[in-house]
Image 1: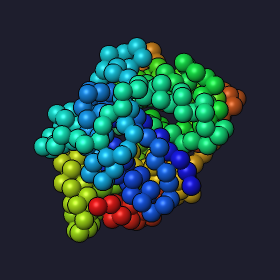
Image 2: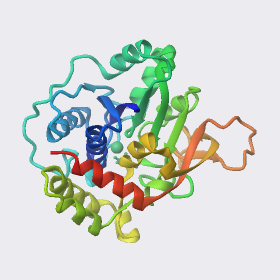
Image 3: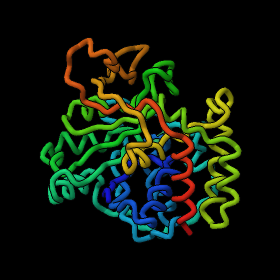
Length: 314
Ligand code: BDR
Ligand code: CA
């Protein structure tokens, strides 16, 4: 079964992704090695605290949580409190986390772990800005040997941007990091907005969670109800895109997603297009494809998997 490190900036859909992974672990479908946090939706202080609280929710106060980068490589930090609430979890009242935050920096943890594991064995699910991953690959390129693949939620091509007209949030926050990761020569799978906008969290799907009969289903329903109401796309598409859980699903069940091998680069300089993906759909540049780019998802199967995972939690 896949071994995962989840690199994340919780974030409401990040919370859903982490809970999904921990539920799938209970079903013996995956092993979650650690959560590593990064600044993005909210500050690093909040994303780290939230990751620990989410581990508690899953009954996993033994989970290893490491805090990483406080700000992007070059740009100043842009956050998304208007979607995720002031604390990143919809403004929910949070208890003091029992899960401890490790002292080691997330990048140091990844370098150490990935240089010591069996080659090509660990999958990284990156569902926030790519700052930690880029730092790790720059600091210790030899760590790439331990990576089976990096499954990224980020970018867009056919679907427009969600933070600027052209750019998706995770790639916009740290485009320089995204470009380093894209050029690293590591196997990459990307779940862009093109596909996450097919995994729509409708009010009916929120109700399924609310009626689950455990603690985490209803809790997630409350959280995702806030998210659904603040995601502007839900007004136009009938539900909010459940972005980050798509990366968890794709890391374990890639067959749920249609994918195309393409060359992808990220604009790091454009005044109007900073953070936008340039996807060479027809291989015009003759560059060797570097990404499996997801184009479609079986959303019914995806939500079945998501619900089974959440139902397996306390
Ligand atoms: C991405 O941006 C964040 O706000 C979400 O958590 C997701 O990772 C979607 O663009
Ligand atoms: Ca995220």
